[in-house]
Length: 324
Image (cartoon, rainbow, N blue to C red; front, side):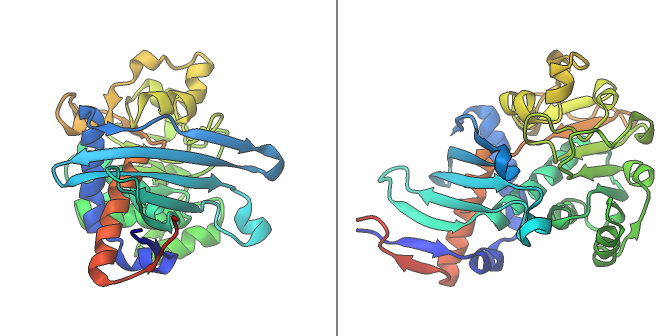
């Protein structure tokens, strides 16, 4: 029986490259739009008693380089850091050969999730932000902000970073790492590109904070009831989602739609449709654009196979006969 490659957090961290992640995720968006990927709806297991939830995310991805299938088991427990000293998000990924069903690899999915999330925002900014952006604002300066920054640097090179977080120490630490500065919420929201990555359920980005021409990557709303942006931001913006069903169910638009403030028919389309040229991206320098990201399972499988190939090439991981 073929063996399965076990890749630890350290193994994945050693091979994951944002230079490879960004094009892999861009290809995944394109495959999603062309219909060459399969992605059943994300399954949620909500556990209010434990102040968190689990999600199961299966997908199949096929392109000229080959086909892959896999599933991610990932949690969201926002209070983990303060209550247990653990990350708020942890994941395990199982990558399979779709032809034989052999489990090729079982890998840490936490780094994979962070990397593909950062890459997806950078791909959105590539198509929706103004040309030659100079400033990058962060609303939320946690772990995800580092991956968002790295991905944007792959696409745009150096950007002036303005960091804001409810925890001043977190904002200061991130600003030091990014050679940027700490700013107010209003200052962060006035940058050319703004990345929000918070778990809030009450909007914190007010319409008055967002000037013309800003592109926002709304990364935090990934479950029903979550909302980072004032609904009026969406009303006045060109909104692009990663997936219609997921976004309307659990993305940034989910609460405004259910409250009747925002009409789903106002959604411009999916990022994949913009990537392949089926829909236009930014129309003018004054336009406000929003990318509503919920996280797609095809992003995971697209990056997981890149990580698997890189680990094989470097001889990392441990092989075990896990299936009898």
